[in-house]
Amino acid sequence: MQSVEQEKTTLHDPDEVLKHSPFHEQVEKHCRLRNWMSWNGYLTARVYDTLASEYFAIRSSCSVMDLTPMEKYRITGPDALKFLNRLVVRDVSKLKPLRVTYVAWCNDEGKVLDDGTIFHLEEGEYRLCSQHHQLDWLLMSSLGMDVTIVEETHDVAALAVQGPTSYSVLCAAGINGLDKLKLFGILHTELNGFKVMVSRTGYTGDLGYELWTEPVNGLDLWDVIFSVKDSGLYDVRAIGLAALEMVRIEAGFIMPGDDFNTAETAIRAGHDRSPFEIGLGWVINFDKPHFTGKKALQEEKGRSIKRRLVKLLVEGNKPPVDSFLYDKKKGQRVGTIKSQIWSPILKANLTLADIEYHKGKPPAEIWAEIYYQKELEWQVTWARCRISKDPFWSHPRRSVTPPERF
Image (cartoon, rainbow, N blue to C red; front, top):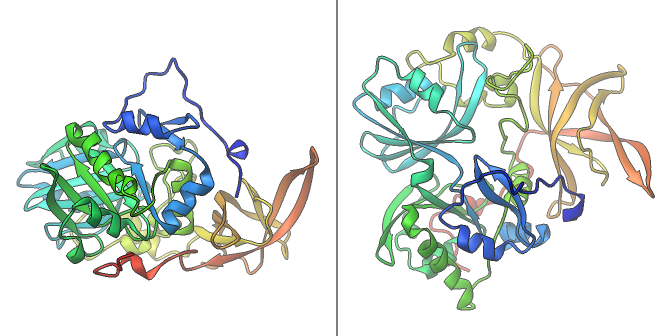
C-alpha cells in the first residue's frame, strides 16, 4: 500500500473560499489528517485516517463518502425526455420511473463532453448527475424545447454507502425495502421522520447504495448510519477521494479529465476523445432519433479505431506513474498510462492507458518504461503489460437481490 506521504496531495489553501457540505461538521471530526482538497468548489476530504483502512472498508466492510459536491441537475417539463434523448448517446426512452442508467454526451463532432447517470425520479421528472459543471451546455442544448433545467447540486445532500456489509448496515439503521431494490433501482422512504431517496448505485464496483436527502437532514442521516457502528454491530468508516480512486480503477470505471481530455477542456486538435476511443461504444444507440454527435459517430463507426483507452495490467511492483508505453518489436512509443494504482486485494499494478491501434488492433506486445527512486537515485526498468477486457475486480454481490446479510 502506498503511504499517504507518497501520494500527490492537494492541501486546502486557507485563502480559497470553499463550500462546506451539509455533512461537514461530522466530516471534519472524522478527518484526522486534515488532508483536504477541492471538489467542485467544496472542501472535501482526500484521506481521513489511513488510505489502507479506507480502501479495505470499501472492499471488506462498509464505507461512507460525502457525495454532495457531485454536479446534479433537475430536468422537468413536457419535453424532458425528448431533451435527454437528444442530449445523450444512449436511448433513454425506455428508462422507467425509479430506475437509473449510465450515459455519456458529446459535441457535434462526436467528442465526449462528460459522462454521468440519469435518475428517473418519477413520471416526467429526472436528475442528471455529472462529474463536471454542465449547466451552460444543458441550457444551450434545450433551446426550442419546453423543458426546465435547475442546478440542484447545493440543494441535495448525498452519501455513498458502499461495501459488503452496506446492505446490513442500512437495514440496521432502519431503512426498509432494500431487500427488493435491484441494481440501478430507486427507493423512496423515510428515516427517523425525514424523507430519503435510496438508489442502488455507486462507483466502487461492489455492493452499495447512494442516499439522497434535503441538506437540513444531512447530519441526522450521517448520525443514524454511524449509530450502527456505535452499537458495535458493524464497522462503518468514512472514506475520501483517494480510496475511491483506487476502487474505481479496480472496477474499470473511467474519470473524465483524468483518463481522457473532454471536448471542452482539450486544447489541441486530436486530443479529445470519442466514445469509441474510451471504450464507451456500447452506450451508443444509432436506432434512436437524432442526438448530438450522431452523424460524426456514424461516420467514425465505419473506420478502424486509431487509439483506445484500455485497462492495462503492468507486471512487477514498481508504480508506472505517467509511464510511456512502447511496442518493443517496432521500437515505437504507442501510448501513455493515465491512471494507476497498486491493488492491495489483487496484488497487481492496475492502470488505465491510452494506446495507439493499428488497423483496429492494439500492439501485440506492450512494455512500460518505468522510472522510480531507490536510495535517492532515479532508476529505470521495463515491465510487460497486458490488456484486460474485463474489469480488474468484480464481485457477484453487486447485483444479487436481496443481498446476503452479514
